Amino acid sequence: MNFPQQDFDFSQPMLLEGMRVLPEHIDANGHMNVGYYNVIFDLALDKFFVPFDLDWSYVQRTNLSTFVLETHVCYLQEVVQNDPLRFTFQLLDYDAKRLHYFMGMYHAEKNYLAATSEQALLHVSLETRRASPFLEEHQALFARMLAGHGKLPRPEQAGRSIGLAKKPKA
Image (cartoon, rainbow, N blue to C red; front, top):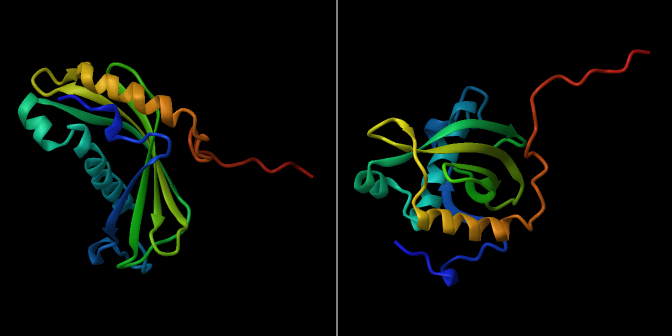
């Protein structure tokens, strides 16, 4: 499959709208449960991959897929049942077999950043269960995407590590 240059505008992060916090995502605290953040980010990623021919039809046709290697989620402001969501996707880096990207989850009406998910994934042959290079057309697409997304500011939460800040002793 070829991806014509004019089909994608990578001068801004990609945008996905139309998702919502479902009743089953809500926990005893009355907001979206921590586990569902990963679920909804994964569902958003699946939707981002459709126009790039990296969705389930690609997996079925090629016996190739992607496996997430690492995820770092930042929970910034809660969302509750029926809140409309908007997602952004920014490619931070790639090589022949891996992607490093950043997604933001926004409240679609109030426009606040609710959570972020920074992820690394690996392209895999399902036959061998080993890393496999992306198809040449995907690599060319990622090069175009990074040429645009690489000019964008790096998201504040990207590259964070987890730990407790040490307070200076008095």
